[in-house]
Image (cartoon, rainbow, N blue to C red):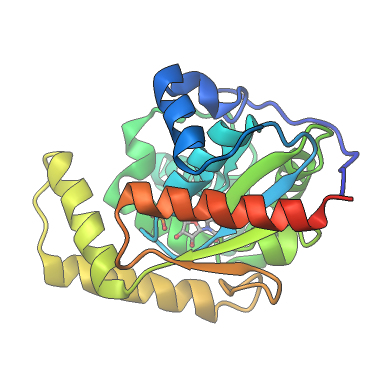
Length: 254
Ligand code: CDP
């Protein structure tokens, strides 16, 4: 198992505390019992979770962090924070230099609903294709992955670029149709009106942008375990992720 040596990043309102603190204790225990794991402590393990939009990677990553008592970084939030800065300044998302300037001040509140708004999601998807923006955010993510106690990170390029030596890599995916249905439900739950066809088209164009960009495109790392959540409920996806990670960690143990 590799143990990173880099400094710990604790940003404002961002991955500062292990997520298990936000989950009721009763739920943590039942999750562990459900998958028959005895000791949820895996100090030092780095777990990389990648996948396309609405695949369930964030939920899976949070559950893994909670279960294994590891700090968690949702790297998509970094790109969203840059996008939100740019949007608030009225900057041009089509201009790499303006996007780079928006990386200067990345203190943000992860509970800010605007981070997940549609315009910000669209801008995040655009500016994340810029090499200069990715380079500006790289160190912060690598420092988080390198902290001594281990970490869980989720995004698009964790297993390929940010933490290529991660102990376990998961690539979480689902069909575009299923992901569109999930995103539509999410939007409706937030009281926003949207049409399935539009959401599906948006998911497809984001997939294309993510997979087609030159720097750090979305792709499954050669040594990543595939978790297709198309036909799984949330609980089943989490249980399967825990099973896969546990098996891989057990295999790597001396
Ligand atoms: O889950 P969803 O696609 O809605 O968004 P996210 O994971 O919060 O990521 C926001 C945007 O940042 C996405 O459109 C990705 O293109 C980009 N991103 C990236 O390029 N690399 C990462 N490691 C994480 C996110």
